[in-house]
Image 1 (spheres, rainbow over the protein chains, first blue to last red):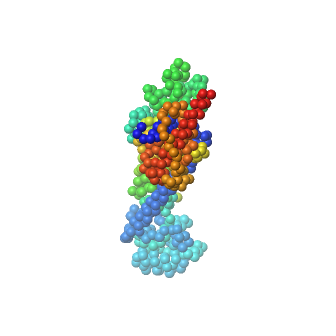
Image 2: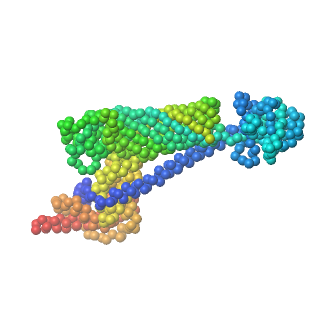
Image 3: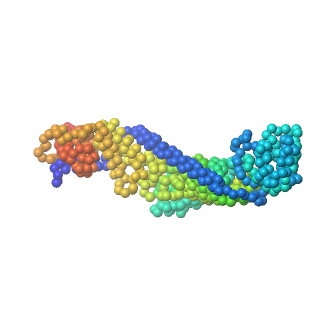
Length: 440
Length: 186
C-alpha cells in the first residue's frame, strides 16, 4: 500500500460496490409526477412561440400586401367587365364599405335612371356636361347614389331623402365608362370549405443501426385518408389565412409477425403484456390475452414465451396472420397561409403552413378472413405532433360564391410519432385534397 | 439499438412506462449511494427524489459516451453535495479535533465477515463532514483538489477530514468485527 489508510478505503470501496437497497415505496410516483409537472410549461412555451410567429408572419404579410395595393396608381380601363353592373351604395351609413378609385362601365344612353329630385334640373346639368367625371360630380353634389332597382330592372339614382312614390327619369349621355369615386360593395372575405383526400404515408429514416433498418424494411404504408372542414379569411387581394379541423387516419403494415389465437389457456402469468413488438413508430403491447405473437427469424417480438419455452404449433394454436396493421388517428388543427398566384376563373394558390396533430386513436390489429382481430396498442406515441405542409391549390370558380378545389399537398412531420425505437424516423404524407368552398 | 438507449428515448418522449422502467432498474443502486451520503433515511429519500428528477430532466444532455450508470451516480452524488452545502457552513482545519491515529493499520483479515450492510451502517455513523470527504475520496476517487472545490473547503481540510474519517472507521470496523466474532463464538 502506497498510502496509509488505503486498506480501509479498499474495504469500503469494494464492500459497497454494486450494493443495492430498495427505496421506500411511493418515491417513484412522486418523482414521475414532479417530472411531468415540470415538462408542461415547455410544451406551452413552444405552442405560444409558434402562435406568435404565425401571427407576426400574418401581420407582416398583411402589411406588405397593403403596401403593394396602395402603391403608385394610374387610371385603369376595365376591359372584359361583366355586363351586370356593380351595385353602388351610399357610404354614410355603413363605413365598412371600401373606397376605391376606378372606372366602371355604364350602359348606353338608352338606360333610364330614376331620381326623385328635380328631374329637369338634373337632366339639364347632365346633358350639358362633357365628361363622365363631371357627371359623377353632379351626382355627388346632389347626394345621389346608384343602386339596383329590381322594379325597373336597371339602375336608379336616388337622393338621400328618397321619395319613391314620385320617381322621375333622366337619360344619361352615351359614355362607355364612368369614373367612380364612390363606395363599392364589400368583398367576400370569408370562405368555408369541405375537403378530403386519400393520402400516401411513409417515413424518412436516418437510423443507421441494424435494428432500425430491419424495422423499416418490414413495414409498408397502408391506404390512409384525411378530411375535414376549413375556414379561411382573405387578408388581402392575394393572401389568405386558413384554419379548420381535419381528421386523418394513418397506418402501416408490419410484416413478419405471426399471430395465433387460443393462447389464453396456456398463459399462467398475471397482469402485464406477454408480447411486445418493436416498430419504427413505437412498441406494440399486445393486450389481447388470447393472442400469441412470434417473429420470423428476427428479434422484433420481445416475450418470455420464446420458441424453446412454448411452441404454438405443438399447442395447436390457431394461426391468424403473418402481419400486423398499426393505425393512428389524429385531429389536426392547421394554420395555413395561401398566396394566390393566378386570380382568374381558374385560380392557383401556393399553400404552406403548420398543423398541430392531436392523437385521438391508436390501435393495432390483424385480419382474418377480412375481419379485424385486435392485438393491442402502440405505446410511446407522442400525443401531440407538429407537421408542416406545402401544396399547390387549384380553384375553379363555379360562381361568385362557390368553387371547386383541388390541392396536392405534401406534409412532413417535424417530430416523429414516437422516439422509443429507431432513430430519427420522420413520417411524411402526400395527398390530393379535393372539395368545395363557399365564400361569404 | 441497445435497450438502455431505447429506454432513454422513451423517457425523453415522456413515456411513463420507460420512466418507470429506468427508475426500477437503477433506483436500488442509487438509493444505496444516497444512504451512504446521508445521515438518515428521510434525507436519503430526498436526495434520491431530487437526483432522479434531475436525471429525467437532463437525459437529453447524456451523450451516450461512457457509463450511463456512472452518469446517474454523478448526478446523485452532486445532489447529495448540494444538500450538504446548503445545510452546513464552511469549516476550518482547526475545527477538527485531534484524534490519535492507531499505531498499526489492521490488515484485510481483520475485516473478514463484514457485509455491505455493516459497512453502510459504519459509514453513516461518521460525522457529516468526514463522511462527505471519505465518500468522495475513497469511494468515488476524487482528488483532494477536486473535493476542496466540490465541498467548498481547503485542500488541507479535505486531507485532515479524510485522515480523521479513516481513524474513526478503523476503530468502528475493529469493534464491529469484535462484536461479530463474539456473537459467532457465543
